[in-house]
Structures are given as structure tokens and as C-alpha cells.
Image 1: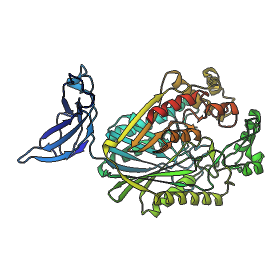
Image 2: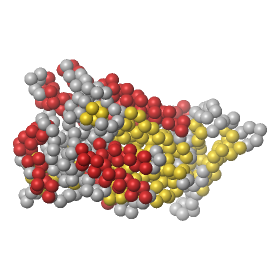
Image 3: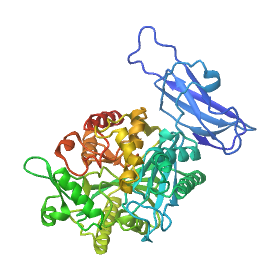
Image 4: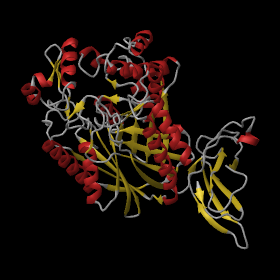
Length: 552
């Protein structure tokens, strides 16, 4: 898509065909196109849709006036044929928009909850540091693409729908081209409008999250994204860097000789009450032990399966960096549970990196960290939060230093979507969940959790798909996935394209809860127990099939 002042519009397309594979009676050569509007005013964007039997085509757009002025040329774009629809005269043929100049804009808004409002495990009693929602809008590769990362613990079900729809309306795209993720800080905000609709009739409205605050934040993010379009900047190159993060991540699942989880290594063995007692009791019921009960063994156990690399992508205009995106797989908490709101060591490291780069924006995403946390290296003290922050910031600096630039054109960018229906865990029973929700004698936490699970179950029963997506940037692929995904999915995705860069952002729609591998459900442990995961073991096959399609 192209932005320019318009007097009149002339479009010329030259085409190229190959003699290879021609039959004795080759197909007729044609090229047809149309714009997305019948008329334009100054500074409007023009989308040119082209259908052609040619292998490639080269459009030229010119402004007609006293003197013809060429405003855009492109060469070697891939041709595409589509059947002519019955409503083509009024709705167009649905052909792809010819790629325009690649541009990007950046938006950041405050997402800090008010004091006294519900956060993950307690009312917010203190703001340690502010939370944010931040993202990018990528323009020129078809309709706008939005990537957004929020410093909250969870956005799920109808809450996830609301975020995507609002951002899509703001920038003039469809929700399918919007990815929204949380970083999953454990003193952050929850957002699930589907669960809220179930809670309100039971007298529990606003107990899970501050609805007016959340809606205000969504609106602010949408307005910021819309306003950012006026500051969109050209993209000429993509930089890719990576660095090992030292002594932060460790696998949470410590297996015994029988192949089952014997110790659940939490993010810290110092967890406040009453959260700790609840976790220890549930662990005993499920046949394993919490690391707080076996501290020395949990600390001595190996790191286990992790992805040690932090990856960083940076968009450039020539030699000038515009914005960076980073990806790392670990639960992002050092200590939590008292309502002391913080962006945690990942957010603090992000801020330190931005400061070191003279304010260059960094949008950080949490990778597939469902079974990964800092438990081996974290004693849950404020001093250790500072240490973890330094280690993350150091890795960000080294990834930046290792960045290598390559040219990036709009024609090399693509947004791919794969809708999937996740298999629901057998323990999810609508009647039982509704009974718990309606039981005024049940603990409030059980009723709140039942609403979230019921909201997910109903959506799955109604055939509502979840979206897997992939942003292709030349030889770099960024997967956007739901839930608290196990790190094995991230490592498997990388193996599918061993010679390319594959990044993964998890914690999209958090409705599914933890998403384990098939074998993990037989191994037991915290992440796959009924209170944690809403999916069945067959989820691995569904997700891996989707990942393979996206990475083709």
C-alpha cells in the first residue's frame, strides 16, 4: 500500500512469464487490477490488488497532472490467479494487495492497575515500577499487522478477542492480523470478559479484575496504535542477533527414576502464604513434592530442558534502528503474591536496554516458558531480582552487539494464520464447573477459577478456534502461540527450519492454561494437573501440525 497526494492515478503493470513448463496451448496471458477505493483524497493510502496469469509482474503507479510523475515502482512481484467471484464488480476479486514500501510504527501505553484493584493473587498494594502495553504496526505487506505485548499475567477468551478487535479497528485491519501476548508477570492484571460474564450473575463482578480499568487500557492501546500510524517509518533492513542468557532459566519438572515428576521446581522456593501451603498440599495430592519442601535437591538438580538463547530482531531504516523485538523463554518472576505490582526482571531489563540504546524502543515477548522458570537460581529476594535483571540485560546487550543486518522488502514479508481447535481435558465438566461457580459456600478462588475454565470449555464446545500465526520476515519466522506452552514446542519449531531464525511468542490467548507435550500428561506434575491445564494430551499433535503448516 502506498501513501501519496493524489491528483489522478495511472497504473501500469508489466508481466513476465517463463517458457519452462508451457504446453502446446499456453494459457492466455492476462493482468487485471483494481484499487481498494473508487476515489481518494490527499494522503490516503492506495491498495492495488492484482490478478495475473504471469509468474511475476512489475507495477508502476503515477500521479497524473500537468506532468506525469511516477510515485512508486516495484519489480518481480509474485503473480496470483483467482476465480472471478459473482460479486466481483462490487466487492472485488479478493486478490492480494501489491506490496508497497515497508513501514513500521511503534506504540506504548501505561497498563499499571490502580492501587486496591485485583491483580494475580492479591489486591494491588504498591507499584514497584509501571506496567506497559507496547507493540508495533507493520505496514506495506498487505493489510496492517499488529504485534502487542502486555505486562499482565493473563489475557484470555473474550478478553483476548477484545484486545485484538480493538487494535484491528484502530489501524484498519482484521483481528486475524493482530497478535496480543502477555509477558506473564505474577503481580500483573488478569483479563477475561467471558469469565466476567459468568461471574457477574453470581455476585462476583469485578473480583477477578478491574473491568473499567481494563477497558480503558484497551482503548488507550488502540488509540496509541492509531496515532502511531502518523509516525510510521520506512524499513529497509532487518537485524537478527542472539545471546545465551546465563543462570536464569531452569526446567520446572524434575523427574524421578520411574519417569514421573518427583519435584516441581517453582520459580522460587520462597513463596508467600497462603499460596505456598496450597501449592504444597496440591502437590502431595497429585503425587509429587513442591520444591519448597525439598529445597537442596531442587537447587542441585540440573537446569534441564530449556532454550538458553535470547533472540533479538531489529528493524532498520538504513543504518538507523527503529525498534527491537526480543524473545526469551522463562517464567518472568522473582518474588510475587503480595500485590506489589512490577514488570519484573524482564521488564526492568527491557528498560535498562532501552536506556543504554538512547531510548530505542524494545518490545519483549515471553517464549514457550510453561515448564521453565528461574527456580534453580532464584532465592526469592529483592537482591536476586536485581541479579536476574542484570543477567537479562546483559544478554540483551550481547544480542544487540551480535546483530547482523540484511535487506528486507515488503514482498519478503507475510502473515500466515492457522486456526486450530484444541482437544479439551477430560476433567473439564460443564455441570461441575457451573455447580462450583454457583456454590456460595465454596472458596472464592475456586469459583473464580471455575469461571475461567468454563469460559474456555464453552468456547471449545461451540467450535470457536484458537489462532496460531506466523510472521515471515525474509528468512526469519516469528510464531505467535496461545497458552503457557512447554519449551519443547519452541525447540521443535526451530528444528523444522534449522538454517533460518525461528522466534516464538507464547502466552497469547491464555484460555487453555498450561499446554504440555503428550508425554508430560502421563508424567504428572504441576503444569499438567487438572487445576493447571485445560487441554488433553492430544494437543501436541494439533499444535505441531499447525506449526509445520505455518513454517512451510
